[in-house]
Amino acid sequence: GAGVSQSPSNKVTEKGKDVELRCDPISGHTALYWYRQSLGQGLEFLIYFQGNSAPDKSGLPSDRFSAERTGGSVSTLTIQRTQQEDSAVYLCASSPAGQLLGYTFGSGTRLTVV
Amino acid sequence: GQQVMQIPQYQHVQEGEDFTTYCNSSTTLSNIQWYKQRPGGHPVFLIQLVKSGEVKKQKRLTFQFGEAKKNSSLHITATQTTDVGTYFCAGRGGGYQKVTFGTGTKLQVIP
Image (cartoon, rainbow over all chains, first blue to last red; front, side):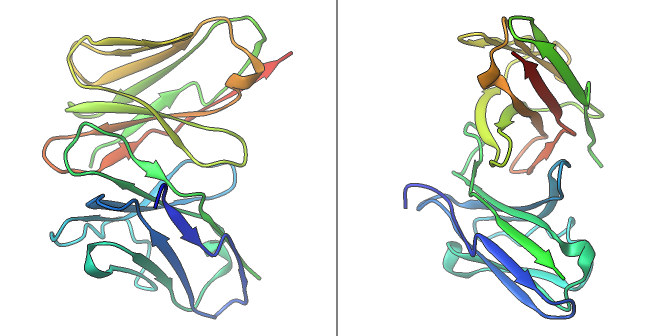
């Protein structure tokens, strides 16, 4: 597609439920990133996929968080047993291989845990 | 791990005044990127600097990369209300490392 697509745009869930957030990167972009942004805060790195390499999971805050990227394209971020502190905007970004171009971000999924 | 700090955290300016945000990395960077996030929006890539001492301009925006490749700055001349938002720098080490985003500077322009 023309841009990075994320779904859903908004998600309200009850505490303790599992949620799945989807990211469809720009076609051909080999690098995909998930970030989390709480209201008025900066960008918190979660996970990074680069081609066929093992993902960099160093930013995942707990074992309730996991992500996969199927076929080098679509990625799903799963949060199990959601907590209120998980409420934030989850941003996905992709970039081409190499270092000469910036990230293109999606519009994000606003997750609210009630 | 790599840390990237930005100052100031917030800046209010009168429309027409200049604005500068500074970005400092704890380690040497291979390149640095700048992003702008409008209120309610997502970060949008502005520019990337690669060379030591590099200076690039985009209209009223001037970007600099330090000689030691550990710091950078973004200067906006004669701010406009359309410049409102949060400006993030993002530094990358070598290879295929991910970028590390700075803490951001939130700019408010008073008409």
